[in-house]
Image (tube, rainbow over all chains, first blue to last red; front, side, top):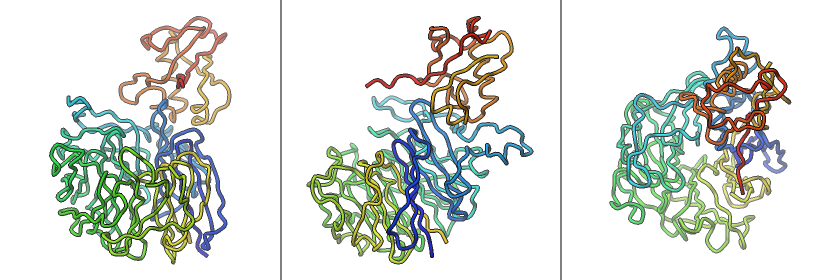
Length: 388
Length: 98
């Protein structure tokens, strides 16, 4: 029987939740890296036991961790016992060395003046769909890095910052590449989303990038609502069978594109509010999508204190509230952008974590929910793996 | 031998318990101690000081013999009691406040 492994990054460590294919009786391990902010953990689609993790601290900076045994043991890449005895001798300690390529350059600062790029942390790691040693990392200040040696060294794909980055300006949450989507049918095509930066696409493996924001409107956030860059994109998602169709949860508005981002159209429909952070797509139904509406940019909690996932089976426009098993009063948590995911079992499983430390799971495509765990630190990210 | 006390999270990262003892060539300076520390424990590169600039991270402090050496130039020589091993060199995570 298949097993499911959920990787949870929190404000104070990482947790690994495992269960059999019935998805009922969960085991919880952790905290791993106790006390550190764990922005994101994600396994390689090629080798599920290869897991990358972003570990960060306001005191001690960025660390990249890697597990090659499904999260039982961890090492900073290049420093596992086997690698220490390798031909390279002592590790160079560069798995956390994220250096902007070439001239550092400047973006707009809060006061409107140019400000040099400063590396702060890695928000998201996206392992390659074909090679376990290759992965991409989304950084704050906004940039994308790539490793081809299992995380021992990282190199910036600096073409992204050629896409009008002088006009990017951080919001209150910083300015980070928080979403990286790899086109499973075209390894040269990558999408990224940047908070307060926008959405971008490369068709040449990361050498050149262009903004893909036509149709986005931000009348309350930007002086020019139709600006090419600067939109606060919160999350984008795709179904692997249709990588030209993207869904977006923006600061305000839920949108979709059917042509790889060349034109976006709003599909907020009857949502109670179209502000929110995560968005994801059903594993087997490419037109079924999920969001978690949040009251507003000023009130980061669910409307009326009712935690509701909304599902559209029509690719947006028409939405239904999913409430069974979720708190329907006095709930004032948030669900962050990387804290929702879907598994590939039948029926599709949906998972999300909250800033109140709950991780909820649904084993029936969202019809009903259970709290897998209730009292973790604030959840930053949730990823799931289905294991043979 | 120079005795170095690491903060909790860096001890975990380096997988050491208690103090670390390092051989540091004379004259013993803050930079010399950090160089020796990172050579012994490459995993600590980038955690105490920046990879590229070698600047101390803002919320890391250096103490020795009841003195705060954090703002001193890294070439400053450490006190004789640290050089002799009578006193440790402390790398400290700054107070968060609150």
